[in-house]
Image (tube, rainbow, N blue to C red; front, side):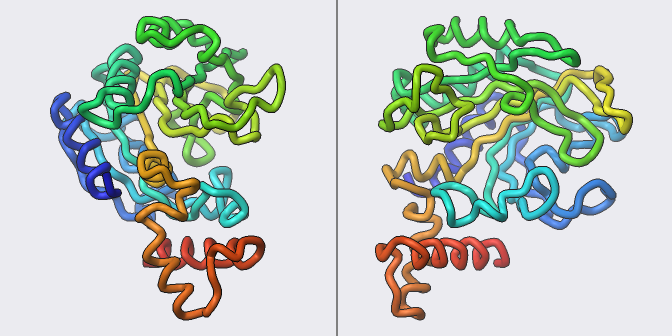
Amino acid sequence: MDSNQIRETFLDFFRSKGHRIVPSAPMVVKNDPTLMFTNAGMNQFKDLFLGNSPIRDRRVADSQKCLRVSGKHNDLEEVGLDTYHHTMFEMLGNWSLGDYFKKEAIEWSWEFLTSPDYLGLDPEHLAVSVFAGDEHAPRDEESYEHWRRMGLPEDRIFFLPKENNWWGPAGITGPCGPDTEMFLITDKEPCGPDCSPACDCGRYLEIWNDVFMEYNKQADGSYLPLEQKNVDTGMGLDRTIAVLQGAPCVYESDVFRPIITKIEALSGRKYEEGGEVQRAIRIIADHIRCAA
């Protein structure tokens, strides 16, 4: 499937689960002093999570254009150095605003990833992580049990700390919560006996993240329970495209290849030269796409 087909397949799947499809919000954030740019799919739903605005639909889905160039969620310095970071990317998301919670989110994630009617990924090549718990929130045994019910063995379910399995808030304060993340197990060898999705060795490639928005972080650093429990999920469209197209990195998928071909024609240099030339071409391609 090409990028447009993957996007539409995702939206069609969640439409069939009773979600209303909503448009991508502007990348320049309006009426939120804590953010300059939309850096996550949840930004446009922030007031709905907090109960500050009336909820029209309790189930929505979208493909949100995001920009990460500053603040806590900043990918700018990584662009070109590795195979998957960008300043601008699309985040496929499905949202529950006080409706379904962990059980349905996990079941649908698994169905979309593994069913031959959708992405058809091999379940043997998937691993997940769940929140290990800390002084602010308990260990997420519920998500663990749901993954076991989906058929995942214990050795492919990792309990990880807040730095790995907690999302938000998008700004200094706001909605946040523990998450469960899904990873493609690549053909890279484990980096050691404790190799896990927390490593940077490249064996585990994150492709989806289900965030369970249960808390509202305060300015004093405390976490208060939200009145309603919400689900905020995100699947990076660019990474998913690369996986399904068998591309060794996102820059070699159909999203970037036409841009890179044009850069090669104008510069007289080739992406396959590698090294600094390849990194420069990646950076230019990323920044042109982001600006456009």
